[in-house]
Image 1 (cartoon, rainbow, N blue to C red):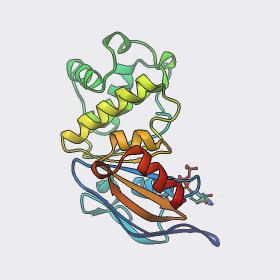
Image 2 (image 1 turned 30 degrees about the horizontal axis):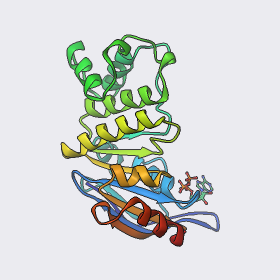
Image 3 (image 1 turned 135 degrees about the horizontal axis):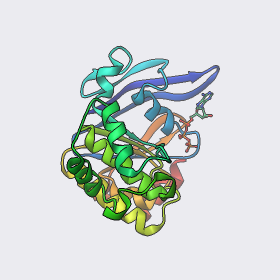
Image 4 (image 1 turned 90 degrees about the vertical axis):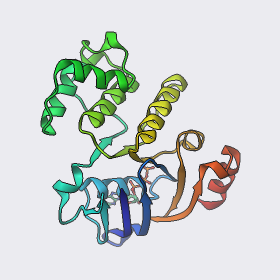
Length: 231
Ligand SMILES: Nc1ncnc2c1ncn2[C@@H]1O[C@H](COP(=O)(O)OP(=O)(O)OP(=O)(O)O)[C@@H](O)[C@H]1O
């Protein structure tokens, strides 16, 4: 579903990505770990079409982002660290607005169902976003991804700053999305959450994917050790 094929990105003389090769299959949750500056956000930004690679190609559902970006991005939803929504609109209104922007119109009952599925408590649906916590904003972000029927979801540091309960809820929701066949690529600094939520983990260093591990074959402690000896 998501393919990075020998992606390279240089900024002047600085190489941010250096031949990155990775694939995320249907139903996978691929977590990218790596120190600040390892190239995680650059990788995500290339899939989103925010950044053009210097060489190599990103494909979404086989569609190259560089030449058919609009078509490629139809398959994609993005959950940044802080989901940007309109503070003066309610959760339901935000979902309606962003669904329409993506070309979908749903009756209120269906919008409500998306918010419920994303885990947003019913009493919050009609409250203004300005009063939402970070975790609640993310749930609206997930509801938008559901409304767009996105096959692939990119997430950048989605659990940073969430309390343990919100992180656990987020983990359950993301695993539910993968169980339905969505592909998730997530950049994170949280090794323990990565082992919990992920199906595979990639450790990046200086723009390269140095290790890829299956989470079924590694404990959180062993992953932490591998991470520390890698970076
Ligand atoms: N617009 C830019 N101009 C110049 N250098 C950039 C730009 N964007 C990123 N870089 C550099 O590219 C490298 C990779 O950055 P990137 O943000 O992808 O890392 P990261 O792994 O996401 O880090 P973090 O964990 O801090 O978010 C860094 O050295 C960064 O300084």
